Image 1: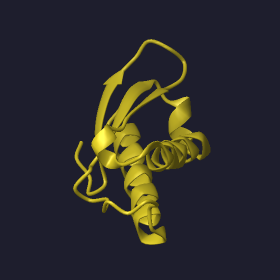
Image 2: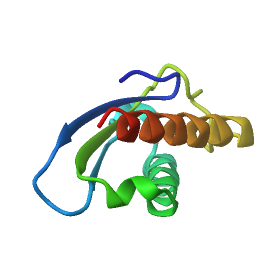
Image 3: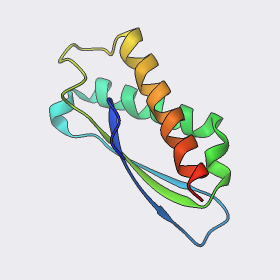
Image 4: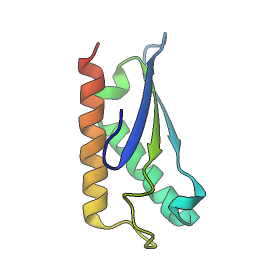
Length: 95
């Protein structure tokens, strides 16, 4: 599933909960920036009800959307969170 800020791959699993994988290439930026992206994704996943469903999800960053600045802007973070929430809802409704 492609969103403006991320690309998501998902697959049903046989467990009682969801698992999250995050892929961020070195082209995204330095370690501080990549870790910031991963923290944002983990926080959205942790706060959502999606973690109680039975999917494996891989979140891949869209390097073209995020500028090469050292830190992500507030607008970029907001768009990332909105895209992830929307995608998680869409996946759970597809059951």
